[in-house]
Length: 221
Ligand SMILES: C[C@@H](N)C(=O)N[C@H](C)C(=O)O
Ligand SMILES: [Zn+2]
Image (cartoon, rainbow, N blue to C red):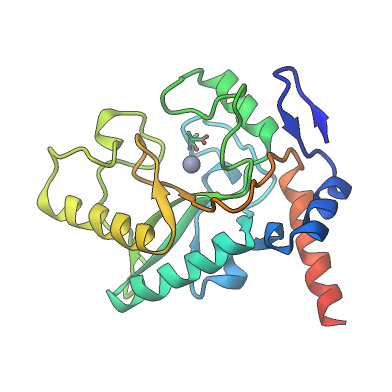
């Protein structure tokens, strides 16, 4: 582990990551799509259509820690029983991307703070919404993703009934399966695990994807 200007401990190499996984296999990073059947991916930071008007990832990659992926699979099962499914906007996000985001948009309410790090950097935060199973169309939610407004708060009430119903379905099923909603962003969920600390990581997302794919193919051999 190495430090950054804020003195935060960061995992910056695959070797450091491998060491922590060797000590606790629940820290393994996985592809969300490998665990959550029929999940849709719309990784906003892999293109320019996002709040920063900037492409931050080389391609759409959605990764999270193993227990978060398993919990999300359980949530997906219950959503599917209600005729809806999950669409993922973001998962693991390297620490230096959080720093870059804050430099572009220095907002202390809605942005991950470089001096704290984000749960996305720990691989346990997910940005997501719901889609109709039949059409794949997004359910009406209070705001678009990354709208930095009061209406994005998950308790905001001045909304059409249908929108509240959709948001509350998302909240209740996610909570039941081990996630807590961010206090200011209806789309942001943290996987809650009080038994271990998931380290902050600054490993490029494509490098992490390669690691995940390599360990998958080694398991098959
Ligand atoms: C940038 C936004 N999508 C986000 O994820 N904000 C939270 C607070 C975070 O960075 O952890
Ligand atoms: Zn988020």
